[in-house]
Length: 368
Ligand code: UDP
Image (tube, rainbow, N blue to C red; front, side):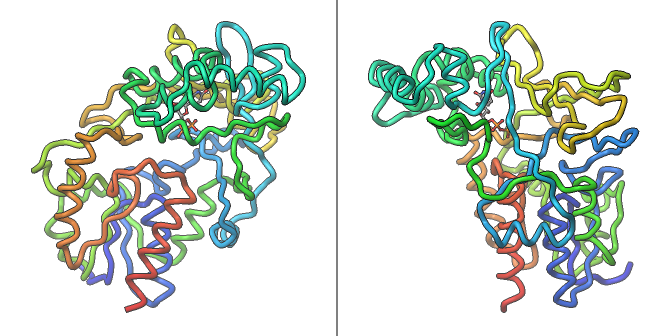
């Protein structure tokens, strides 16, 4: 086998950005992926002119101009702004929590009225130093919003009580006293025109890529094929689970092609209630303002994770963090292996954070 400078295991965003940067420095890379396509979870399948986000909705957003400029090298972005809706007990609410939501909940029309209700509820139910997601939510938005729009969704999403979950998960959701349904606070946001595959193809242009290659099935030969390895898979699997398995939450996606033009009028609709098994329905054409006569929707079902299922969200509790730290200590002793990305760093990453992390790792690697 040809000798490469880097064998990159995993063709997701981390691997592709690293491969691109390494290639720019004149290094020879081979990128492998066990799936039959590149792009990891940002991969889109074009179904009859609609880019279907096969592994869940991906909406690009960042506050960092350098990261925005970086992705814009490979695709132009449209002006999509994520404004999800949530259905709770038969009623429709705007997200994130903003004046529209407060009007829908309480019929109030001014920020002062909303503030008065929320502050009162925070005083009554909130906690000075929230210890878990429930306490954090009650301290941020009070009881009504927590019960209507957070508790059931969260417990369905994570398969555990909100009191067992870390507070940081809910800090992602903005609370606003303006009529503004933009889910993100970041300065830059959009969907790449032509889909995420365009970015991945741009990143990997001129780089050797092999799909349907399972690193663990042919580890020794593959390791010998390069001077260094960039590993973006599960760190516990890399070390043969010697300290035990890290836990994840899995998802199941049910895609459906409909011969109607417009199923739900919005790209993302969340389903809060426990008695509905899915957490969201995505209608992909709305990410790109599609005008097709048909549509594709995806129901997203949270699932208990087991080894044969896809690992989506790290379960961030103390036990998993302790186990991860043991694996991390091992990884820090490696001279020729770089670990990066959601699975190798066991981290709930957004796309812009993965790109930042890969650029940082590449900078470290190529500055010496
Ligand atoms: N969340 C919620 N209600 C919603 C949407 C989100 O309570 O309608 C909470 C839930 O705990 C979830 C977290 O916010 O895990 C982050 O959700 P988001 O959709 O931002 O993240 P994603 O699942 O897309 O990574």
